[in-house]
Structure formats: C-alpha cells, structure tokens
Length: 186
Image (cartoon, rainbow, N blue to C red; front, top):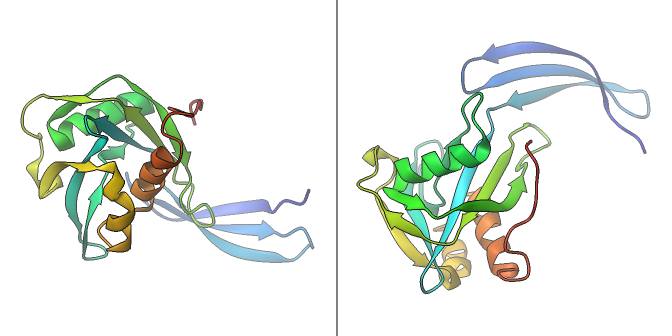
C-alpha cells in the first residue's frame, strides 16, 4: 500500500474557525508537491424522523453560494464537547425542538482531498416543541418535510448541502435494517 507522506507543514492563516496550511508532501514515486490543507472544527448534525416519516429541516440562505435550501440542523462541536451533545444543542438552538434520544447515523469527511472536516450525524426518532429557536437568523423557517420528497427536492436544487443529502439518502436507503451505524469518537 502506498501513502503520501507529509514532510512538513506551515501555517498560512488561523482563527477559531479555520486553520489553513501548506504541506510539503512526498508522493509514493518520490516526487514532491506543495498541497493546501484546510482544518476545521468538527461538525455534528441531527436527522429527526417524526410521524408520517417526516424529517425536521431548516430552510436557510447560505451567503457564500448565494443559495437557499433545506438542511438538517447542526453545527460546530466546541472544544471539549462531545459530538452527540453538540448535535442536541444545535438541534434545540436552531429548531426550537428538543430531539428524542440521539443515536449514531452517519460519519462523513465530505471533502477529504483538501480539508480534515469531520462530521457526525445522529438520528432522533421524534422531537418535542421546546420554545422558539434561540437564534431566528439561522433559518427562514423550520418544517417537517416528508422523507419521500427528498429525491425531488434534490433534483429541484432545494437540497444542495452534501451533508444533508448524504444523511437523508442514507436514512432512506436503509431505514430499518440499519437504524444507526456504530462509530466511535473521531
């Protein structure tokens, strides 16, 4: 098995959200290249499945791509926080609902050729209202959307988030056979 070997890294930019580096990498054939690396804090999200096989989604605008779309609730895992706790916190803050007990669903590294971004998505079988979202600017609206509508929403460009797509399509592909995959802390 051949591996790329990092011989050194240098910081280009760093703040609480991003750590951008340039790495000197030796390829298996002995050639070398300089490669950019983007390091980010881990992410945790929730797919809440409710009555009628509906999922609780956020309709939100993303200014970077100037696009609107449905997304699962989720966000950054704070230093020292467990992903499952971050997922529950973000779910409550963004939706105004309290998730039923969470269990692992999916683990992703959505763009591992350039970033170390780690994402864990949890499943909740239900949720209960807990008050208004603590930050109403997170989304335009929060709605229970039929899971069966997901392929059509993707085709219409109303779900563009890769994490949301992966989590919802994974749930649709194996809803009962694999209610949650087991994964450890990342």
